[in-house]
View 1 (tube, rainbow, N blue to C red):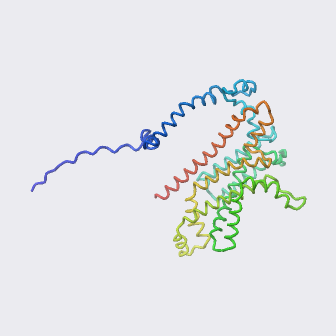
View 2 (view 1 turned 30 degrees about the horizontal axis):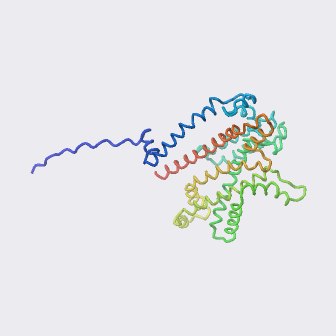
View 3 (view 1 turned 120 degrees about the horizontal axis):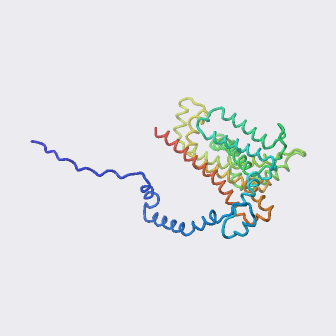
Length: 367
């Protein structure tokens, strides 16, 4: 029997999964609820965005002219307040003629942070680089050596203080958090109880209470004639507070690791610390990257609370700049929008870096 060849009809080409139309359909018009919400947002944008643009850009005053800003009130934004007060907002009460020093210290800190986030710099000597850069930054800020004028810590402020407090508290809080998280899972009752009490005690009070205790109550328990700089006390308070929250995030990652991973490591003869360092912690930390970065962002923003102990970081420096000058006091909104943009840039950069880490981890898992 002769077989009869019957050609199969050509199938249609698969639809494209890339391009702006596909992205719009998938993210903004995937169903009727999403479409309705998208159209509502577009309507609000049409109604309000043109007015916001006129106020913020087209009718705004950028010159440091208080009279022109007063004349434009209700019509356009007064960015002249930023032009006039930007150095006081950025550097706080640091002596005007010495402000190149906090600028240089901030550049060093930012370069160190960016290097620490780059894979080629993940080497053993990175820890030594941190010590060198921090020593240089503190030397520039405090002075008293190498011909630099002495500047006490109560005059530090603005963006350099915000970056310094957040960076140091994050770096010091992370190893404490890892140890506390491991301690809460320890088989030793004394260690487990101590770590539990520490976490629950710190998490049970707001950060503002911790700062108040560190700044005003702690010196009362010190011997007469002995005192610790307020910046050090505040840094210790933020570090201990952040470590308690980070410890719970890390503990969640530790609990997600199957028990068989530990048993397999023990069967290979690995010690407890080698098991944690080589098997458990790398997997646990990879699972909770979003939570860790979210905690870092919270630490960065929480530094604004140090104003209550007379350390004028970025937010406090803005209040200091405007409250001391009646001519510019009515334009606080523009000032707060300026520092909001600064906070947004740093927080957005951290969130993007978190997504990059997640992509790198997912790529390694898919190999």
